[in-house]
Image (cartoon, rainbow, N blue to C red; front, side, top):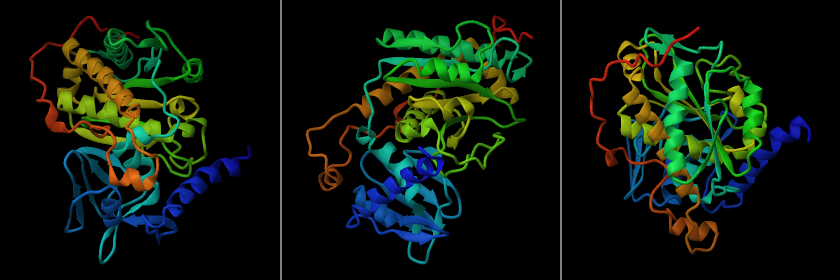
Length: 369
């Protein structure tokens, strides 16, 4: 398949999906892209409450809420922050969101059980970042390579207890190439790939998660070198699963650990580009931040992160595999949204903030060389 065809086909499918239900969507061309109004979004997804005040729109119903502000790329679903692929725009009568963002973010988050080609998860591949001579980020208490491995091992135990088969790209302090990690993940059908990292960046803090950027969309990862690369990659075959997985894991960690929300974003990190299964890369906090770095250095926090990642994976598995007895048509689906008990993101009110325990940094996790 030619590169042109690879890039064009997903866009044609998106356009077809929207034009095929023209009675539901009114496409507005802005800056050379397809947009829809938030009124249109509220109507299609059956939000009874819709307000627009000072270019901030809010859509709400019993278990789901969406909020966005024109002139930004911030989109909140159930209180969880997402970065849109194209700016949210304002018009005289309504605010606009790109059709790409409706298709690649809102739809799979609100209706995860309608994600195409999703399967019951059989294997979970956990990928602790760095290792061996590559320490990753470091602080006075240790190194990213050790912290990420500790989190992965905690998640592994939780997932095994839940009945999943779990594989790890590394289980010890050894170097594993990026392409080797991808090749390893691609050996397992009906699996998902979760790459675990920690961040570095001065006094910045918080949790951020990445799914592969859709074809034709630039990365919105600030620390990525090639943000202009928008080519189709093998990982784009799972765009909807990728964002649903990222959202489920991100929301669960966020709600249970009471961290600052840096958002669910789209990137083109190497381990996400050519993996053939749903994948997410999660940055579990900043080692460079004095307070957060010390928290990360506690065994208690790392165990919490691992357990939360494991629960997020289970939430994703349950949501995408929920099936309701209803004809698979847009007209019927629209009248019965959502077809599951809740959206992929857990409302933040479901869990109390994590107890602020005064654990001392663990000396069992060595920074190493």
